[in-house]
Length: 319
Length: 319
Image 1 (cartoon, chains in turn green, yellow):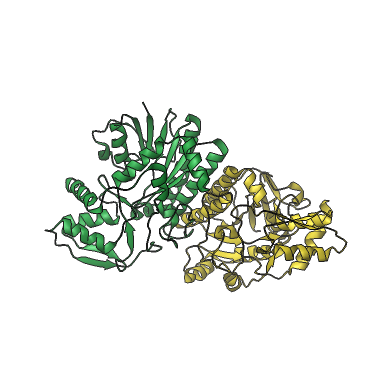
Image 2 (image 1 turned 135 degrees about the vertical axis):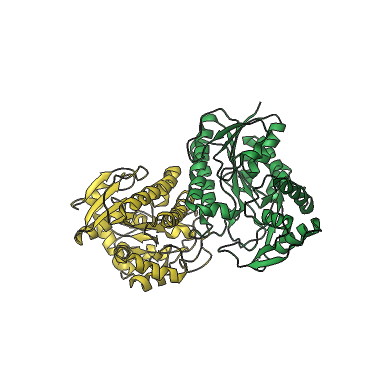
């Protein structure tokens, strides 16, 4: 029986992953400080729950796979206590790598498209180095996540830790925190309450939106690869560590997203309002998924409308 | 009497700074683990010496200014134990910021032009975000130094720590480690021993070379500014933290540097040999010093030939 630890396992991604892994017969332990995670996300899911901050050393146990998902991920959440966010990225990663080093677990680390910052290349391949401000309002997250990648590389080099990075692009779906503050949950909630939608800037900046089930597919396929398969694939690509973009390349403007949600909720009377663009907001971002396709045989399958329907159904249950 | 702590104070920059500050009547404490620093660098300099790694919490004392210079800085040194280098950047910065938070010291932090990586803008102004690989052989240093800037910002925001960043460009001079492995010391030593010079790549990549006295001038001027003066200047520039490039903008190719040294040592019989360029080696880097000039009234004064003469004289004493 595969023993899995999920840090941040009571959060949006963690709750979806825990459900999937339990269904597949894994023995799942969740570590979460409930800073943004919610116990209700794991209701009825048979996991061992440890309420603890990932910045503290993780209790020893013999895990086969550790998914490191612990970090506030939406701008309003991660900017609320930005030093805490930065230290969660750094110390959480270190504690996971230290544990993995001792128990020889595979680490699947939730990196992010934010490490590309405001990119100057579209779409972004994994070899793109990124364009990030060290001193901006997003830096606590962006630079924290960047240095977590570098820490992973250094633990792999120093101790042979088998760590695999996933650069996750914008993801949505059931178990998102309604107060998460990101555009999909904001728009759906505003629509369900017939409140006006807030578009930042002109509303013409684009995002790719990945339904969470697609991401979880990629996580599971990635963890099933052997270390030798990873070495063979990624060394041929000229990168020093396994690293995959995982996202949906379909680009939609904020305005198109709003319009799609309105189409799914024909009774909704919400209007659109505009607010200034926050600092360092990336104007555009889109994954190049070639490597994930070639290595995992993976591609996103859930179209936006279908994913939004499932997400709207979930949000209805939370109101 | 101004009380100053210099972390890494037995290293190249630290030894030059300690000498200057002692001359100006400061009470100087040096903290150094002697990983690359050398006690001989401080011979005859009346400082309090603490042999300790900056990754460990720093003993409490009431400092007015802390210069955070502790980190291996030449590629052969920082790549020797790359995880150690990364953790020195991270934990050293944190320990300095924690101490400064308690004793209300001004922190002058030695950031680096390496945070610009392999830049796509020439010369680099402080507002340039940089172009850095998170997963390369230089990442332990580059990303470590980048996240140290972000940690500085977050401590300034969370606790009001008065931290001022100096992005130091290539610097040379007396008290460099002869085994440092950087181009100026390599060439001078090779010339003094009549050994062949090693040029990497074509030898046409350029660097700017700053004589250490110029950098120390900038350090001292920067520390004399009040917090209010910093706020006024940098907020008008639209940056969230005081940050200054300090370097010599004169660009020389590796080949020109070699030729200048050969001119100063007319009896030298060294030839030039070529080796492949190491990974991620930046092809060109040059400071935009406008802010340092406007804020500090500072400009580099020592021409290359004069600085090289002083450096050659120093290296002669070490042979």
